[in-house]
Length: 478
Ligand SMILES: Cc1ncc(COP(=O)(O)O)c(C=O)c1O
Image 1: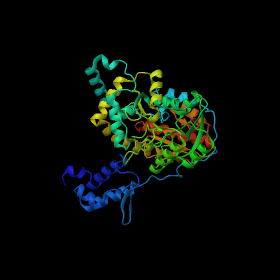
Image 2 (image 1 turned 90 degrees about the horizontal axis):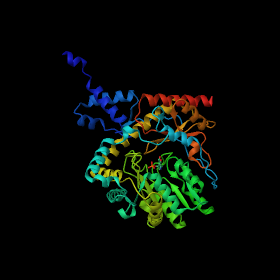
Image 3 (image 1 turned 45 degrees about the vertical axis):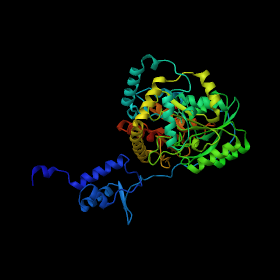
Image 4 (image 1 turned 180 degrees about the vertical axis):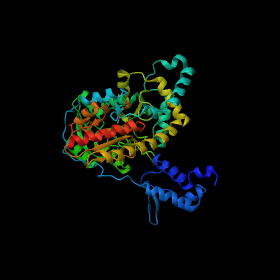
């Protein structure tokens, strides 16, 4: 045998490592069927026995499992406990409590020495910065000074056209005139709340919910009422109905697609039923859709706006989680509240990010955004599963973790008795940022929960930090 043949990796091993890589990259997901032995033999032009040997090797490694008469499937990672489940409570209006931890989490964002499991941010390596730079440069060259002047509400027509087109594809009929561009989704939320509520009014929110909105509710003098929310399927409609029966609610704030912090996805029928319920009661819905484009597989889920016939849904979106948190480009479709939104926008912040809006419009028009999304979706899926595996490996017995179908956030429930505010302080000392569960609740519920950001490229530094966090959690419960 020639020397080169002696060292060459056997074919079945090469095939096994190719397949293993596809599984790691999220091409084949946990629980998904992989191509049959015959199909792989045909597609890779190798013998059936080579494929069988490769599959046997992957079975030994615990990557796949064979099921009699059904074929081979990607093994679902072993979980120690069930996923977190809904926690019901008696809903009552409260003044929102805010925590100083929020400021610490935000400060940590710009400290490169802190491990970024805190704020919900995609890592810089996940951003399509080269493409964005190209579009920014070419617009600036083309337009000269005009690219750097004020642009008034409702924002660049080119961007609104692109947003309306995407909404059509997703099943929402909007025209560019229905859309207002904003300075990030945060401004859209301020405008939405201000358009429908006065100081002292009650806003119904998911429990837990995005802490940024709880802060706004507090700062703007509203009160919150928390509605039970399921980690997988989102806001519970029966609980919402009870709240609407018993209280005068000025608006419902909801994230139906890949909710922050739990990642839940509301089933389509429930979306339709929720819009119907709120429309009948005359209660506007503020829909935050900022994670909606980050579905890990299948088609993008529809928004609540797709079911809105009466203009009662104020849809808010933006590009901070997908293209660039720094470019501050958000948007909203305010429905029947368009007039109020425009007049508020004109007084609060009349100009938008002209150049950024145009660059994003060009990027959307080119089809490049869809290519980018395809790539980051599978990366987030992969990172989340790697992080879940580490958590199951080294967090306290009895810990549960969500398995979201989109976005890049994990919600972790530690056993009763854990105090994640204390854990966050201990983690900050070790230069690890996390967000304790209590700040996602107006009444400081979820003391034993925490949210982890999976938006940064997975590496040894992150893995070591996550293991250290697990050890800190175990120590707290000893
Ligand atoms: C659910 C949700 N909505 C809105 C925002 C604010 O987005 P932006 O940075 O575009 O203002 C965030 C940011 O974390 C978020 O998580």
